[in-house]
Image (cartoon, rainbow, N blue to C red; front, side):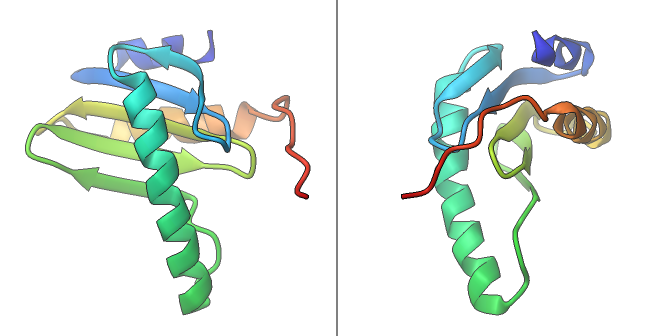
Amino acid sequence: MRLDVLRTVPGLVGGVLAGPDGLPLEMVGPGGDALAAELTSLGAVLERMGRRLGAGAVTRVAFTSERVEVVAVAGETFLLAAALQRGTDTRAAGQLLARLASELSDLPVLEHA
């Protein structure tokens, strides 16, 4: 599994590799379904905001909630994300996600109607 490398990240709550439809292709830890669906929804909002501001595509997002730190990297055909316990340094997860993203060339591309 591609995401097994995330298991080495301290404080990992869960990780997901999702397709552009928000369905998880791979998961580690609990909550992968919810993480994939909600980040895909957030990605649509960020894409619209980037387009309206003329900023281009959003390819990385990180945020902190009451209990978790979330780091996500988006590609044209995928979304990679890791949720960590709040207060955990997210740099290692971000670096691993970026490396994984650069290796994801074998995912199918959806045809737009």
